Image 1 (cartoon, rainbow, N blue to C red):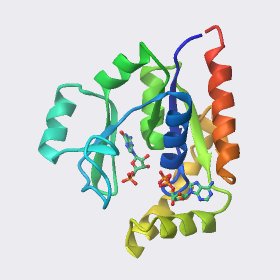
Image 2 (image 1 turned 90 degrees about the vertical axis):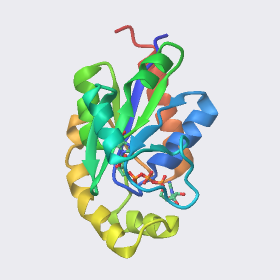
Image 3 (image 1 turned 120 degrees about the vertical axis):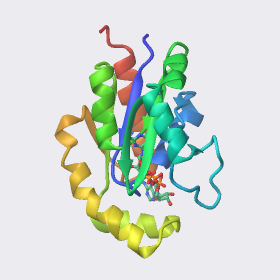
Length: 186
Ligand code: ADP
Ligand code: 5GP
């Protein structure tokens, strides 16, 4: 069976990080750690959630072609380190948790990448989850809410959409998708 590169995207607060963490712990996939210029949130550890780097360092790596893709949101840069992904893919399946534009850019470089959009059961549920996570100010929650329709608008360009209502059901569905894709011939 081939190793697959799986991109998980969807609105902020929909549950991507939670899903990706369970999938990697349970199924042994590699989770790519992105670089970002945003400040760490309370409890985030450098090298675990992200590599937190300066804007200058980020732009230097862009010049060196060190990212598989990168984009800017909420006034910060985010990028997927190319070396890590290429190395890991030789040994196992790799999960990227990145935004829709990043996902579509990855597909241009790696057409065999599998793009999965995580969809919220409702807009109000996303707001509830962002409030529950307790990491953003009210203003930042509103900014994230405004971006939801833009992200969900790209759903038709993704290979799969999965509604994250019950977490366990979502994780099982993703595992099923990945197993099916792994056993494909092409
Ligand atoms: P994202 O990475 O998409 O921004 P998170 O994984 O941080 O989202 O999840 C946001 C919040 O929603 C977290 O508090 C998480 O525990 C919670 N959450 C994730 N999935 C579900 C679910 N299926 N049902 C209820 N709460 C969820
Ligand atoms: P947050 O600041 O909430 O951790 O992430 C904000 C957004 O950046 C999310 O939509 C997340 O998926 C996206 N993101 C995280 N890492 C990357 C990356 O490497 N590349 C791209 N394009 N987006 C990323």
